[in-house]
Length: 179
Length: 179
DNA sequence: CCTCGTCCTGTACGGCCGTACAGGACGGTC
DNA sequence: GACCGTCCTGTACGGCCGTACAGGACGAGG
Image (cartoon, rainbow over all chains, first blue to last red; front, side, top):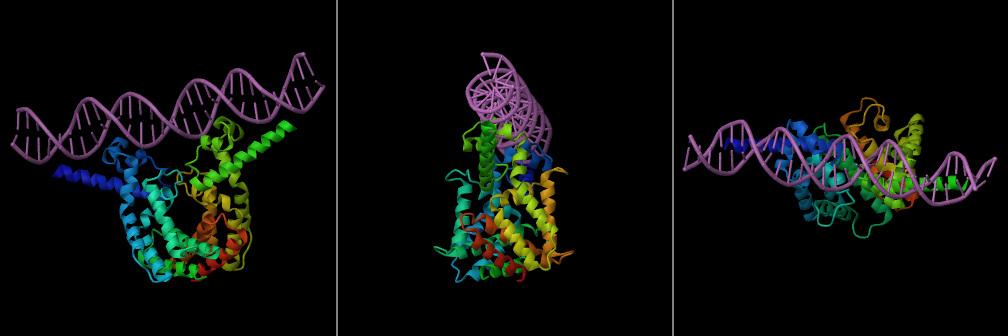
């Protein structure tokens, strides 16, 4: 089983390295060779573990996507509770937040049925949940601003302790939406 | 002069098409062929007008970058006035805001001296101006959240009239920073 | 000892990218 | 009518991408 374990170790090492690289450069800007160099392997070795490159991104995103899905599945009485839950989600998955919201969900060329399409749908649902049905222009701006505040705030403070980021950002998001 | 005019017309058409494509897909995801197809030309024709591809982005960004530079050069008594000015700037250049803040300023592989490096420096200066020197963790989160609220709010409401976006976002940004 | 599966390398291929270069269409200039 | 600069096309090249495939190292199991 030693051999099998070794494989899983390098597999997770690749996953971690790819996650970090994607977070700081963006999905499209990172090649398999870059990831391979970060873990000291060849790009063929990376491709061996994750046959299509998309799987890498999919596997990195998976837990966060599930979490987001669960968040959307829960009923929330008001926008404060929802924003609190969303902020907690964003902080918990801050390492993959960029990949999730920009690179995958932001791609316009995503073919129907692809993970990118699904993620984008989740993003729209997130907005709809916060802004409500048929939102006024005023509400639209406030909702996007609140979501954006959380997203950028999380992405730029990865070096800080999660607790204070979460606390401050929740307050900030609520303040935006109620402004 | 008719010939010369024609050149300038297609030149600006390329510029406009590239700006829109960059805004919705991101810089790296748009090829010269895509831009060419959008204006009904060959990619060689696009390359004729903008010899390196970087020049396209540089020329699209230029007015916004100058504006941002001017904004940073002005003295502002307090954060409210600064946030108001920044929001006005963001709304005015909303078509290039993504290109400016993510694609160019977010690239990590930007070599020293490149426009990307300069833009990133401007971003840092923007944050420093708002957060002040040696900001506390608390202030850091609030400053990034405020900037992020404006950026995302602007990017997601390009179809709305500028006045109400600017007004609402200014209020939102102030609310975040004072939360 | 031989076999087998796992893990990884080396090599090679097709595809798309940005770029270079030669040439053609076309109106303006003399 | 000859000349010229501008604008654009067609073709071709090198480079990097992701992928496919054959083969080698190596511990596990019979």
